[in-house]
Image (cartoon, rainbow, N blue to C red; front, side, top):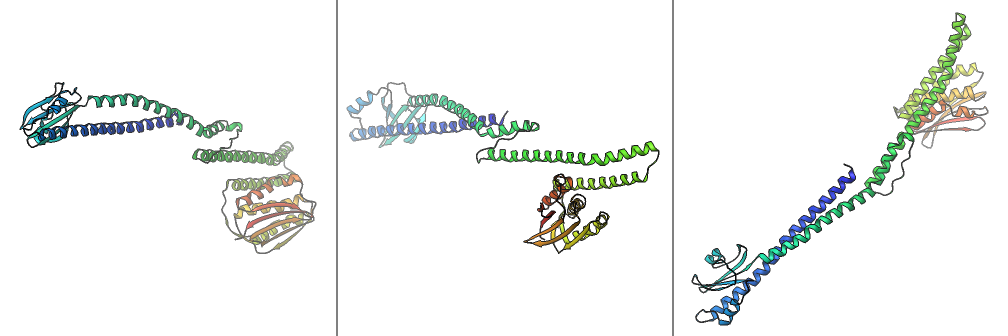
Length: 412
């Protein structure tokens, strides 16, 4: 059963329950009001009979009162007792005598007995019992129920139908979200949900979740694409040199150098892929670091490579305490230095770091003609950008008399 149907049935049930309770209370109220009106008339009639009888010296009813009571058409009945003996009956109905035996014994009271409403009043040895049948009142209440119950059923049905329409309108954002979820594999977009109610808020939250999943899938696809692209070249070089060595029956020194170089390249690639995966998945371990120490270690590590390529590597490091994942930060810096030494076509590469405006920064600059567009879109710079994003930092590349790659982190 759908949520829309359940809510509609619940609405119809609650409406019927409320109407049933209201009808029951109204039935009781009408019954009480009808009995109160009958009691008032019976009490007035009994007092009139007693007073008329007591005004006569012989405690006899005046002829006009007897004639008036004798002419009753059965709407009410009057019985008069003197000293417990029935002396007068005014009724065309075959009524029980007395109408209320217990009330006659007490000499006063109001009671409903055998379908009659009876008032008993005694004074100076004279007792009058005046009764009226309850059938007319019951018939009126029955007609009330016959009219009210079908109306309540129609109102309950109308409430259920109205709830069906309104709930359908309220759940429309969820229905659109459900359809978009079913077509998630096809790249379907979730339409924006309007309104400020809970359904709209849930729809927007789930839409954001689907958007996040789609972005995560795109990142995974790009990651696999980068990995496949970067792995293709060294693996092909490995295979070519191994096939050549197999044909020659031995491995030459030049081939060993190529295999060694490609092995180092695979190692760096594996480190970059691992760092990129950790950064984009948020698996970071921030620790207090000083960018000056990190720059000094990179200077010592890449000085031999700079000398091999005939480049000058400079270091200008001021204290720059920050909070970041040391391994991700080190990998990002290694990539920037390698790019500067290999791709920038420079004669000099400079490492510098410091603090300014509550930010710790580290730059790798060269005096070449700037990185090529392909280098700027490579895996190394992507790792640097992801590492900064994972550490609440920023990464930028600009060309100012060469290429300047800058890492910025909040100061510790």
